[in-house]
Length: 498
Image (cartoon, rainbow, N blue to C red; front, side, top):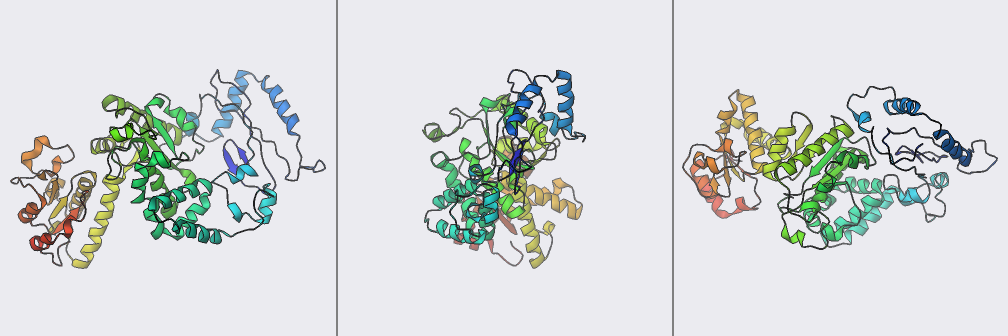
């Protein structure tokens, strides 16, 4: 296995050395060409494949001093562009950056066993152990991946506390990525609640205490003005999906600040296990603008900025720099998923960047698409169409208003009626009661489209009596509300009620 410019390749007989030509931290140049010195795996002097690396490196150092600035620019231009038009700006984004000191990386032997992307543990075959200098670094037994999965599931099941199982899975992901995803794919029903909700919620609450190895990118206010440089520190250039959070509304747990990183990490693990997206194409990001959680600010193990959460222009400028750096680094086709932003930011970010970036909000749009799909499937059983029903929501946050809007859009599409008319079939109840027009001045902007003409109603039970909905949808943090016996007396479900 050898590395050239950060890209790794497995090879049965080769390992490589990558070296930048210039060791300069004073002036900016674009990425220099790379020389790779290759030797055979046996390293014998009689082998015709042996290259004397000492002489090669000496020649590089001597020749580097003779290269003129114009020649350097010409050579580097051809290296960066590679003869292909830079349509999305990925190549130009890597120019004009401070270069790092040269480093020798041998991606075989001991380092290979510490590389989670390529480590196979005891599954390395006899031939692979010879080719990659692993003899003596592993016990003599060779275990198949299926047997590794069996052993790991046995170990995970020994833990009785879900958080311990979560920590075991995260440690496996940091050690052997292939085995982690094999384990998750083969046991998705059992491990999904461990890797993601509900266990990830507790993991985020205790993230500072269980933190062992960083995952993803942490971008804080300290990096303001240098976010593009921060992206260069990430080893993968072909990123396709970014899940980003600012930690202000993690699940139903509130402001967890920098500890919200567990959400992007867990979400992208599912994208790989269930959606087939390559792990190297996924990038979890936490934007740390502080936290208003006093308990975290006084926690000695908190890993984020110890300051109150930034708002207004300071917040907007950091997000703007982040969005610009994403496009410069990875191109305009990278998907940016906003995850667990507070209501007042979630809708604004979606509206602001929806026309300039490929963005998506899971809480607003993802939940809505799943609920609408469920409704359409149910209507196939009970008959009828969406416009024949009256909807009542418990909860008017990101999820509730997002679902309501998508249902209204679908009704408008099916019937040809204006969106304003289809919205009138949908009613929402928040913490202060039924959303009606008389409350308009005090409503947040994303709730205002649902303020219909009606007398004020203080609670959900009275709203059910007044509206008489045929479809009830719960999207609040108050669980099991619909299971109370009094609902059965008031609502009278039938084959046409959902």
